[in-house]
Image 1 (cartoon, rainbow, N blue to C red):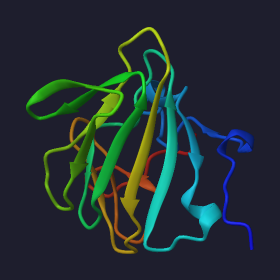
Image 2: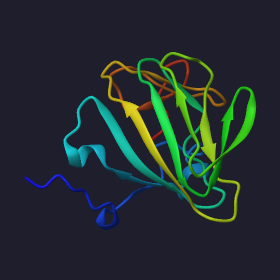
Image 3: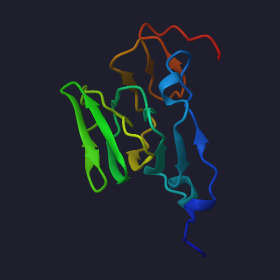
Length: 154
């Protein structure tokens, strides 16, 4: 059985599933889902392309999943509660599950950035968004307000 995955032929998922207006900073985000092609079940692996001005996500943290990013090409600004720090090609960062210091990446440069993302696949993971009124409850993939009320359909 062939194990090689040719990422150059994969069609990326563009944008995000965030409700309006929270989707706007991520509208140009491109993700190639690599882990699914390898039938991985314990962790996911994505190849992320961020054009200039685009964010990886809204700033967030996970209750049950660790995350790790490695910058392959270009540069991004990692935003946490401590502010921003530039990550360049070869730099990486990790985020422990249940640490409420939310994070995301912003491409503030004039060229594309390519980032490898690795994260857990925990069925009971919840996601909290640090700067906006949004969360994803464990066992769900639907964004809701912090009080649990649903967002209108896009």
